[in-house]
Each structure stands twice: as structure tokens, then as C-alpha cells.
Length: 405
Image (cartoon, rainbow, N blue to C red; front, side, top):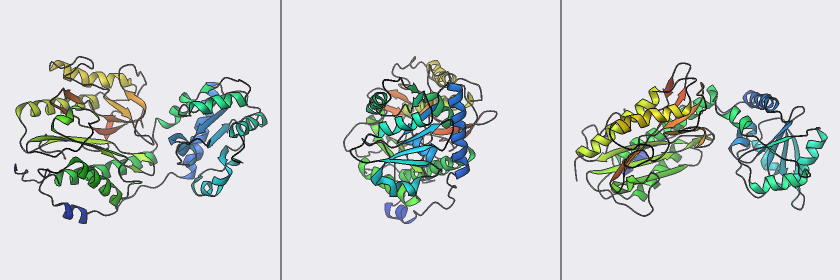
């Protein structure tokens, strides 16, 4: 087995010792407060007026959590928040869930329940008539069946797309949201450090996935790892990996992409490095990836369109003779995505997204380079837009044999 570096970032850490050192994260970020929830609802009402709609319906998922604290996933039973220009928000919920609702609802609301044989869509329609709301914008994440049944309950009335309202609220993070994301990213970076440390020749990627989940749980993540990709060698050429068990060999590339959530706010960090000694081609592509990530970061400032950040990363790679566009060898996907209560959310760092960057927006920076059938390198860290540029949540990797600053 190739000897690990003397600084022990890659390999050399006993798995039992790594587990023994895990404990709850010491500096936890404060939860979102009731005042901030009220500000979010007021902001939504402002955007409703600007969009010319009288009401907004947000269904179960990340946006419902954003506006109300209800962190439930969507199911066939409608749970939603109806916001109108005046009056308390209306929360529509199955009657048997009332007790659970009381434990998560963070806003003052008019709770209206429905029994299993009743139509929640008719309940929404009745509330709209009562509030004299003639137009309704629907959460873009709502299921198609919700849209169909709502239109039926509203007598065929068309529904507006609520994306400008919801995205207009969620895209720019508050100081409290940034603090939660800072904690989540710091925790995941620590898990990455431990995962790199416990590498040994012959370790299986599934064993490493289990350890990463265990470490996230021990540090206090909401539910362990929200996702985890561990790939070795040629498998790193597939951006989201390939199925099956892999075992690490000396001098192989390692790609680990994982994240967790803290009070719903997500991290998503990737590290690529070699277990042993990198060859010349691995080192060249790693440095190119590092330069592309840096170019994207340096392109960020308020007012710059998202697609310009993607273009900055691609220009570095294309000057080196790779690409162009999505052609391989080169960059097969966008440079980054927004992140917050969803792992992937608006805006996106990709050609065609002309959204102007604004302070508080949070995005991944991950212009992965793939050499088909050989290997891939992805370095992924997140930044938030500041008044005059960008700030990293986590420090990028300094070198192919030194994944952590």
C-alpha cells in the first residue's frame, strides 16, 4: 500500500479512533425565529401584488417549511398554506394530523381541517371565495393532480405560476439562514476530513458511505447524510456514480460528494484526490478543475448574470483544449446550483439563466471535468454573494494531495 502523506489528510486514521472522536457540533446556529417567518409572509404578499395575483397556495415541501415551519414531505393528502392579501394565512391539513401540526407550525394561522372522505381542494376554493380572492398562484412544486383538482374546485379557473413569488422570497438568504448553512457546510467538511483519513487499500465504497452517514448523525445533522456518492478510479468519470461495490486500490482517484441538513438547510460538498501518488494526467486535470472553480468564484458579484459565472469556468477549460460546451473531455454539466432548504434550487449557474446575482444568494461551484472511461474530477464548495463579490462557506482544496486547507 502506498504510504499516506505525512500530514495524514489521506489515510492513516484508524476507523475506531475516528468514531471515538465524533461528538455533537459545539456551536449550533439559532433556529429561524417567528419574526423572520412574519417577514417572509409579508415579502410574499408584496410579490403577490407585483405579480397581480390575489392568493398564493404553497404545498408540502421545502417552500411550506420556509413560510410556516411545517417540514412535511408531499403525499397524496393535501397539506398547504393559503396566503391572501388580507387576513391570517390559512393552513389546510388532514384532521388526524392536527396534533402533529401543533408541534411544527411556527406562524399564527387559521387552521382548516378535512376528513378523509372530504375534498381539501374544495376547502381551498371556499377560503378563496370567503376572502374575495379571484386569482390564485400555485406552488410550482405542487403535484399535477393538485393543479387538476384545484381547477375543478374553482370551476375551471386558470392558475398562475407562483415561481416569481416563492423564488423571490427564497433566493436571497437572511443572516439566520446563512448561519445555518455555515454550520451544515462546516459539519460536512469535517466528515470529509474523517472520510479521507480512514481510507485504506481495499476499503469498500459502501462501507465509506455508511461511515459518512454515521459521522453526520454523530455531529448532529437532521437525518444523517441527505445523500452520499463515493466513487473510486474509473467510476469517478460518472458525475453521479455507478451502482455496485467498489474497493479502493493504491494510486486511485477518490471522489466523495455528500451533504447533510441542519434545521432543513443543506450542505453539498465534493472532494476529489488520489489515494497515493497522482500521475501527471490526474494532476493536470485536477489543477485545471481548481482553476475553473476559482475563475467561477472570481466572476461573482452583484448584478452579474448567473450564466456569466458558468461561462468563466468553461473559458478556463476550453483554453486548455477541452470541450467546448458540454463536449467531453470537458465539463458535462452546469457550473453550479442554488442551495438552501433544497439541495438544488434557484438560481442556477448555467447558460440561459440570466438571473442577476444579489447579496444573500447561495450557490454551489462545481465545474466538474470528465475524461470519459478514465476519470473525473469535481471540486465543489458553496459561496454566498456579498455586497462586493462572494464569500466561501468552506475553503476549497489547495492541492490534489491535500484536500483540505
